Image (cartoon, rainbow, N blue to C red; front, side, top):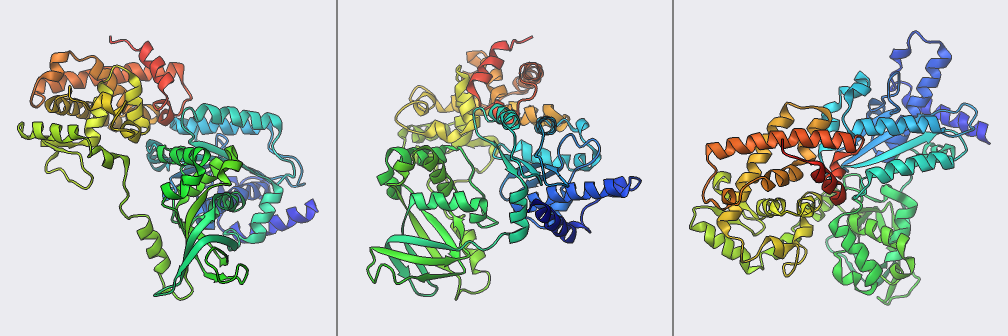
Length: 558
C-alpha cells in the first residue's frame, strides 16, 4: 500500500501547500528537481503545522530548505509555548528508506550552530529571522524540539538514534531542554487523513466522588486516576492542551516535586495538587454506575485541558518511572461543558484559570523573621527592601526586593553552586527557610546594609553586561545573557571585604572598577568556554555546577 499512501500524501501536499511554498530559488532548475524540492519543503511545513498547531501559511513561511541551509529545513519559534522547532525533511518518491546518518549529522551540526548563534553558517532566509530566534535563545525557559520527518516506511536506524541521543545528552546536561521526534510515512499519512488539527479528542472519563454544577453553566468535578491521565497524554500528546496553553515544561523545581510526590507518596497527590481543568464541547453522564456519587462515567467530546499542563506532564513522567505507584494516585479534575455557554466563554475560562494568584516558594520566605529584621535595618539607611509578593518598589535606585537580595547573596558565596542555583532555579534557594541553602544566604550574621551593597555591585555588573550585549552578536551575545550570574560571582570574588562592608551607595570610582572587572571577566570566560565547550548551549552550561566549576578553575585574573 506504500505507493497508494505516497500518492495520497503527495496530493494532499499539493492541495495545501502548492501556492504557499517558495521554490523561486530553483527557477533555473529542471522541473523534476523543482518538484522534489517542493515536496520536501511542503513535508517540512506539514510536520511543523501539525506539531506546533499553526496555520499552513505560517508553517510555509518557516521553511528554510535550500542551498546552504546547514541541515535545517524549517525553523519556527512558538512564543506561546516557548518552543523552538527545528525540522529536517526527506521526500522518498518510492516510499522506502529513512533518513540516513550523513543527513542526521548535518542536522545535528545545524542545530549546534543555531543554538550558538553562528549566523554565518546559514542562508539569508534564516538569518533575516536571527533577532527573533536569538530572543528565543536568550530566554532560559525556551524548549527545543528536533524533528526528523520523511516519507519512508522505515524508522530511524540504530546509528542515527545513537547520534541523536548523544546530541541530546550533551545539550540536556543538567536540565532537559531539547527533545526529538521522528515522523515517518505512517505518521505523515495519519496527519493528512485526520487533517492538520487532528480529530476532536473524545474521551470516556471515570470520576470518583464526583459532583456537578448546573447553574449558570454545566460542569462536573471529582477525582480521576492519575494513570488514566498519563494514558491521555501518551495517546494525544500536546493536542490534549488548548492551543493557547503552554505545554509541559519538563524538569522544573515544581514539576520535580510533583514527580517525587507521585513516586513516593501517591496517596497524598490529590491533597498536594491543585488539579486539572478541561473544557469540552459537551459532557454527558452514562447510566453505568447508577445514581451514586461514588463513581461516574462521563462521555466528553472535544476535550481540551486549559489548566494543569504541568500536572499532566509530571504524571506522565512519573508513570514512565513507576507505573505501579502512579496507579495509586488520583488527581482533581473539573470538566466544563461549553454547550450552553456564550461565545468567548472558553477563552475567558482559559485566561482566568492561568492568571489567578498562586502561592510560590518566595511567599513562604516572608515567614522568616530575618526578612523583617533586614527591612528594619535598611529603613534607617533610607533604603526600601521588599520581601512580600505584590509589593512594588518606589524607586529602584533606593530599593530592592527579595529576588535581588537572593541573587546577590548567592553570587557572593565562594561556592559557585549557589550562583548556579540562582540561574537555574532561584526557587531552589528558598526551598526550606529552616536550613541550607536558604540559611546560608539569610541569617543573623548578614547585615541589611551589606546586602544592599551586594545588590548594587550585582547591578553594576549587569549594567556592563547589558552594554557588552548591545555591541556583541552570536555566541558572545548569548554569553552576556546566560553567563550573567556566573560573571557576577567571579567579579564579587575579586572584591576585598571592605568593599562589601562599606555602607551606602557605590561611588563613581567603584562603579568604574566594577565595569573594568566585568569586561575582563567576560573576555576570559568567553575564551575558556569557547575552548572547553565550543558547541555547548550556553543557556544550559551555566546551569551545570560541574562545568561552571571547571570554567572557574581555568579562570585567572590578568
